[in-house]
Each structure stands twice: as structure tokens, then as C-alpha cells.
Length: 375
Image 1 (cartoon, one colour):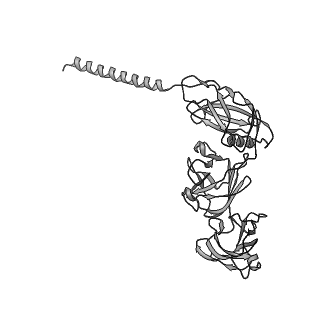
Image 2: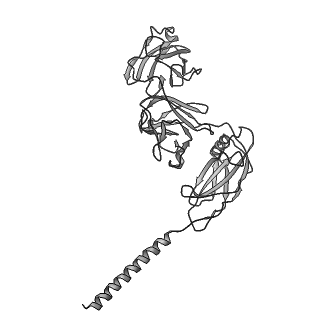
Image 3: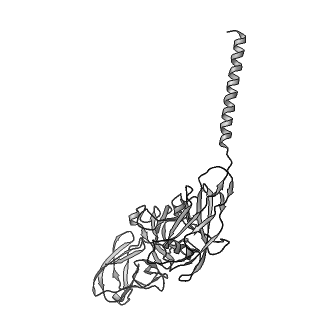
């Protein structure tokens, strides 16, 4: 091969390499597409102007909302968030729901509208105004654009707060949804004195994985599971489904306030543990004589049982020593005598009250789970 031929080959290779570079560069340039919002969604229609919510039909459709498509400079897949507020400035908006895949209509049930109405502060059995808007966005929350406002007059009924079931590696039941611990509920508060260890956990709305799950209300949590807006420092984000408990192992008062303005979760360490050698019953069944109580049999870590006679309106507590001292458990909460099935420690309990008939009953206590039963 002569020098001229070799030179020509080098030139051709150089030109070919340059053309490949230009092709790659142009491919990169084609992927750099700028998307801008050009028009907000417009709320076109509400299916009603006045809604009386009937608690007898919670699953009936109450309101349908439709809106026009938001505009963007290129065709993109949009998401929409439907929000409600008691004020026009949406200072404290409540998210009714979200829709994806560019859907432009949503229907909400009586129960869903009632929760929204009471969360934003409307009064039960009194007609009040609810403002509505639709926000379009891309991805997690990019290029958001807010619609015009519209409103509906709505009469809510008394709000039923959700039930919460504890599950997870941090709990005494582990990841067994069928055994998830139901918390004691009184009005908007749910609570339990129970075992916690530094691991992941969440709350369910039932003793099954679906449909309801409750975790932190942060962007990294799966959207359907976002709930708790406030927590104590020992409860942090775990992963897309779960929270993480970070404190030391022990018995904690877990307390949830489901009021729509709070949605809080706290974990406060109890002064008492659970794995004691002895537990006794004392009350009307023995003349409230703490020095001569009824001895219970230990059946495991923090679990005790006894079979005894319980007469009409029997009242009693559990103690961990033959005296009125630090180790004491009764019906959960002060000024709350009854048979709730949940125990609270000294200074945070009341008498357990059971309407017996003079027959034999098996009484069991689980200090680790924070529960008792009478059978």
C-alpha cells in the first residue's frame, strides 16, 4: 500500500469518527426537551350544589368533580390532586384524592366527603361551605398548576375516627398482619401501653395488609400510606411503607390523635416494664387487701392467668407486689373505670369493672401487649 492510499484511509476514518460523534450529540440533544405549563386545569362541573350527608349510606356516591385538562408545551402524562378547604386561601388544604394517567374526573362517597368536611372544620349537622380546587403536576410534584376555585354547601354528620392496628418488627406481634394489635380508641384518641424495640413498623386499618395503611405523611412514603403529620423524635421515616422506631427497647405509651388538624403519633416510655416474676389481683373480690391478694400464675414473659369467682359489679386491679406500691395496673386511663381489655400503669389507670354473676372466670393479663381478658 502506497503513502497516498494510507493517507486517504486515515482521512476516511477521521471523517467517519466525526460523523458518529455528531450523531451521538444530536441524539443527546433530542432528549433534552423542555416542558412548560401553559394552562391550569379548570374545574368545570360539580354534580351538586348542596349535599346532605346521610350516615346510613356511607358508601353511596356524594359528589362528582370534573375538570378540563391542564396545558403543557409537549404531550406528557399528568397527575391531578383534588383538595378541599374551609377558606378560599386554602391555608390548610385537605387532599380528597389524587388521580393519574390524565384522568379528569373523580367521585367521592358520603364517608369520604364527611371526613373531608369535618377535617377542614365544618360542624356536624350544620350546613357549611367547602371550597374545592384541582392541582395538576408532573412526576412527584413538578410544574404544578392550580385551577380556579369552586364550592359546595355540605352538611356533615358525626365523624367516626379510624381504628389503628400496630404491626412490624418493632412490635410484639412482628410482621403478622392477622395478629396486628388494635389500639384502644376513645373519641379521636387511640392508645396502648405496649412493647416496642428499635425496628420498622406501621399501622393498619384492619388485621390485613389492605386496604388501609398508615405511615408518615412525607413525600418518600407511598402516597396512599401518608397519614401522620406530627411524631415524637423517636419515630422517623423508615422506607416507602414504614416508620422506624429509634428508642430503647421497653414498654411505651403509643398515642394517636386522629383529629384532622393533628394526625399525630407519640411514643412515651412507661416507668414500668413487663417481665416480672409475680402478679396479683386485688379489689372487691378480696376486700381490697393488698397484703393478701389473689396470686396469678405466670405463663410466659409478662403473661399471667388465674381462674377465680367474680360477683356482680366486681372491681379490681393488678399489682406486682403484696402492697400498694409502684407495680400497679388497671383499666387504661384515669377516671375511666370499665372493662376495656387494655391496661394502664399506676397514675394512668382506673378500676377494672366486670359485671359477673358469681361464677368462675378465667382472667388473663399480657403486660407486654398491654391487654387483659375475662372469660
